Length: 72
Image (tube, rainbow, N blue to C red):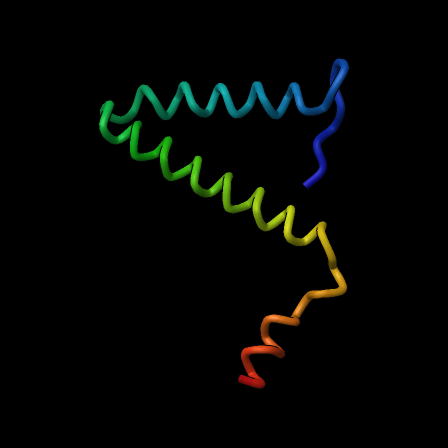
């Protein structure tokens, strides 16, 4: 997915979109539901960040875990 750049950074538009979505969601759910959604999306974001870091570290190791478990 490619975001067009506007202003100094294309990320500003993404930040604005995320903020607007958050505000809309907050008007539709209870405080307890909002807390649960916040925890869920934090977990999803952290998992995506971890996967991105692991992928960037050494792409040549891809599949090594599968090879090692198959041999065990």
